[in-house]
Every structure is written in C-alpha cells, then in structure tokens.
Image (tube, one colour):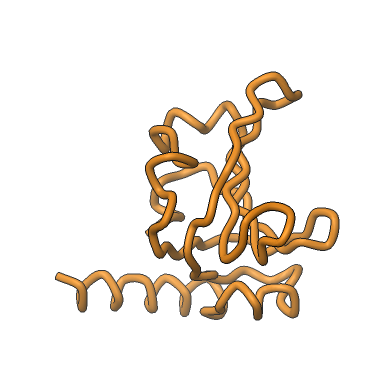
Length: 114
C-alpha cells in the first residue's frame, strides 16, 4: 500500500513539476510542483476576509518553511485540516507561490494533498 501511495505521489510530481522538500520550495517559486514535509500547526482564520486556513509545514509559525493555503470556499473538502493533519507527513501539489517570503501552495481539492 505504501509503495502504491509513493508511486502515486512521484507520478503526480512528475506530471505537475518537480518533487521538493519544504527547504527547496523557495527556489521553485512560479513553478508547479509537489512539496513534502511534516504538518507542524495551522490556523483557520474564520473572521478574516476569505476565511483562509493556513497550514504550516516543518516549523511552528512564524518559523515554518512552507504554507498550505485553503480558502474558506474550499475548506469543506478537507475536514478541519489544521487539526486532522497535525504531526503527519504530507505532500502537496500545485503552483508554488510566495507570501511574505514564505513559499506556499494554494489548494482547493483533496487530490492535491497526499
């Protein structure tokens, strides 16, 4: 089962760009890719505009290396991800962007998260 999951993640990374650790993502801003790391915290900012969920990888805020961003309109696809995924190793696939110097991927669909 693990080998099937790993094969799926690697294939996704090959189809949609490279396969990177969180500490490598900053050198791939503007590219599609798959970034892997450990979830180390998160916050659902339900009173902020757009109701974003910020999920931190490989370090507690503000020292994290990477952020997964989920807008409120897509949050129902992930079932409280900031709590459910905490402490787990995940890979996220999408367009690597940056916000305030921290690389991030915005996701809207569960298939982007393995």
